[in-house]
Image 1 (cartoon, rainbow, N blue to C red):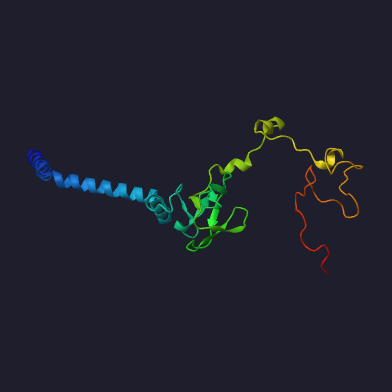
Image 2 (image 1 turned 90 degrees about the horizontal axis):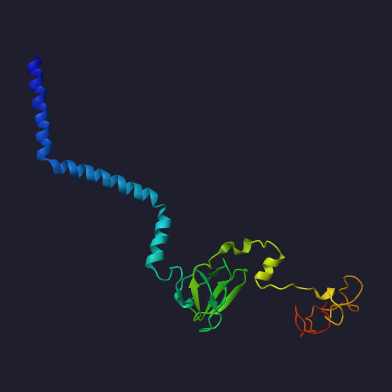
Length: 212
């Protein structure tokens, strides 16, 4: 009985080994397919949302949406985030150049002028032939930087600012008076430079008579 059991086990083992020898490619293909399926599912799960994948494709395929591309405003689309904008064609970038700032195109720039919203919220019409750069200026945390001491501002080339009302009359038109005197006459004096030029409102060109 024991001999019969041993022979049966050996014959079963031989048949299984023979089957594996005759069909190795099928077993290998099944294992490879399973591994590929697992790998593809892992990659699909790690790639993120379809919106992010679409944005990545647009970044590399469409030159109008590629960050860092410089081109005329007429070649861009509505809603594009831009910086380093020209005021006149060929003049060079003048607007939106500070760290971390950006502007946005509000209307489709197909006409002669393009409507742009600046970082301050002001909407400005700019010639569509002017060039700009796609994207945002780097280093957005620059505004959060704290100066460690007074000498730190001097390292940056910033000199002390002295108020005109703290000076003497010979040094500034706002100087003199008792204490923090800001007035000169009945209606006071407008803000002027050390040379007497208006600095805030400029020269008044409208009617002097007050409107009722």
